[in-house]
Figure 1 (cartoon, rainbow, N blue to C red):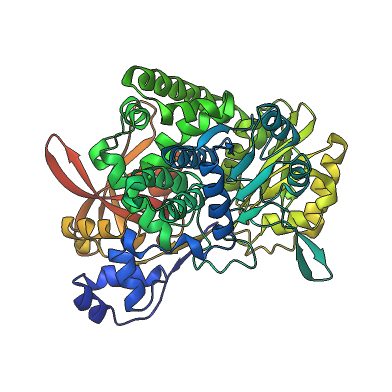
Figure 2: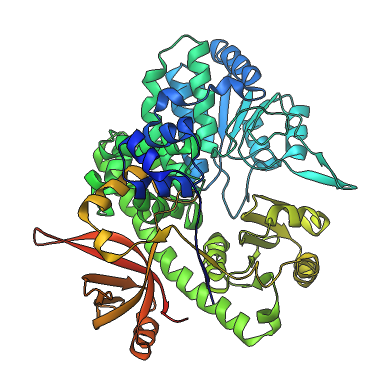
Length: 574
């Protein structure tokens, strides 16, 4: 059972509204997102590129830029080594574009998910040496590759790390002993000694900051690389970073650029996935465009997604976009199958009693383990690891719940893994097959999760009666976009609603439409997507309902109707 609660943050909403010429409702929504004080509200509503922090504030940025300037001027061969996900691919593209436009002798390499695994490894370093590379610059990886970097340095390479992942640490009697790689420069806002004011950047954003700083130092016009902000936006949303602070500016700005992008590959992908370019928003990146870019690294090679971004003509771009879309379609089928297998294993074994779910799907394609973990976490609201059999042992991906810092918990039993890394809410790992059961056992022994930690919380912005749901309000709410993690779409609640004429629609029977009527006789159209049979059953068994909802406008044949899109439901008295 979910726990619903209405956020009750206090402020003078009328005064804020008057000051910023917004309604008190919008003022409350902004306060609910912990945006406090004139400066913060102004940045939230009106922040622009000019408000972004100087990348030189990052520890080692000066060193990284100095080395790169020297290597570019000396004509040394530089290799960008990225990662195979949406963040890594876009970060690789940003560094490659930025460096080559400055005249660098630069090429790229991206690890193969299956053959190489995540991040920097010896094969990639040996390949660079064989190819006569002088300098490696990593992006979206490298912070956890201390051994590999030491090896690369011993072979005479110059290595610069740019990353955004947490720095691995040893737990030394309650004190954290950070394990920073011994690279020539390590640029990562999560370094404990980095004073950069905003820690929530993705790998592509850190890469962008490097290019920006390099342009300034080499006295080139920084405006020339503004277009790379669309790649930062794609990576920020695709890597599920919090859409607050600088990320909000990057995504807002990047989305505007994407609507009229000149990148042939992105243009082709937007067309082939039928995303309406003029209305493109964060949702389309997260659920349509992003998964196609990720599909290359999952089922084929991420180099294909990089090729798409680098496509020089429309013919090549269309071909690559269609390939990626087809790969994503088959990824969806494989995911459905994997989710069904995981659910069956949980429901038919003692797994269902565990607080931390460790599910071993031997034959599942390792590239979709993370997606399956996310779906299982949504279903059971518990931390989840999905493990699969790989060429050399077992690989896995984890997705967590708010109360459980997955990366920190894994640091406590690091000896079990041959490799691991991640964040509070997501992680990746490799281990020997004989350690699978031990891993499940230890993670559950260490987990001090309470019943409350494992109950999903539905955070509601406010109770909003039906007469307040107007086209004007819906339009005003758009000022709060982009929506996503850290800046959720406003969620309202209304109770004691009578449901009129509920009926199921859609060729897959996955849409429930009905009308709602309040105590005063006000009526409104409503729609629900989800387990429609279950929702319909609850409606039929209840006299009155409570719904959480997003207000929306339904356009059909040129006619606009205000409606509510139901998110959660329960009987009113419940």
